[in-house]
Image 1 (cartoon, one colour):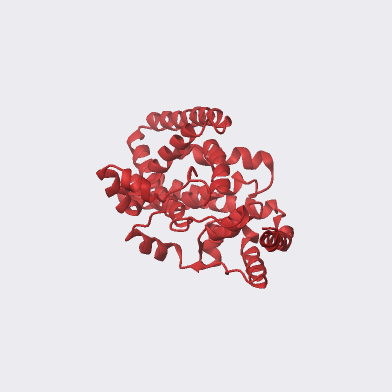
Image 2 (cartoon, helix red, strand yellow):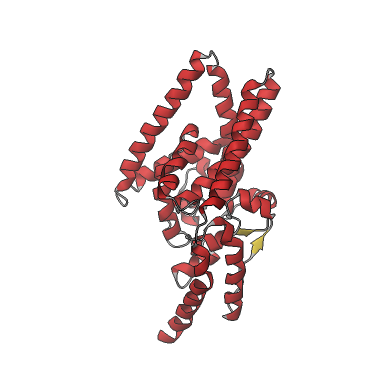
Length: 325
């Protein structure tokens, strides 16, 4: 037992040593990503609300929704304090971004820590999307139908509202394991209510409440599709447990082939295995960490990490099949 554990320990030590210097956060790199995407989003919001036609209003709102989806990805970085490294910024700014879309950021941030601890190990993982064989067999007929059409249902029907409902449900379910979850749910609820009330009052005073509802719905549909696709692709069909937590995270996550620009928009998440194994590495260093990790795995004669095709092709691939744990 000691001889088998020794190589695994040596591998983990070498992996850690190979990427330690990449955990330094440059706040200006993350701030530039946050501000540039946010500015583009707000520009299209202005264009949408200035449009004199319904087509223009919906079209500009849809583009704004796509940009908002990428802006929300920045709030994933902040859960790890790796966007800017400024604790005040990474704590409060994501709430200002998330609450207008009813996204309970504080609850998500707490649950996300459990996801990093339980992915591939504990089926209670709050971000697990893949059903087990036992769950499928015990499910009602309508639930089994849902599982067979899970990708299309989640991306295009449940969308953003589905993610919100799932996050709230998981927060309520796991609040005994994580006492702070109850407080996070309450603070999120108060923050969302206050922000939405403010927007609604302004819209009513301007006589454009229906426009506001339409605008919000367009954003929710676009953001929901993007975030659901990301949520599914990161781990679907990869649930497995390795010898230790670090190796489990390396092999229970999907890495995707993308351009450097898409990688930037997605906050380095195409290198998802590296993010899970080393969550303290900021997004701009993940590609280099991926290369270094591959070199260490090769030196230790371990299977190299796989890069699947891009977001769109992999979504199309998995949307036509069902895979269970």
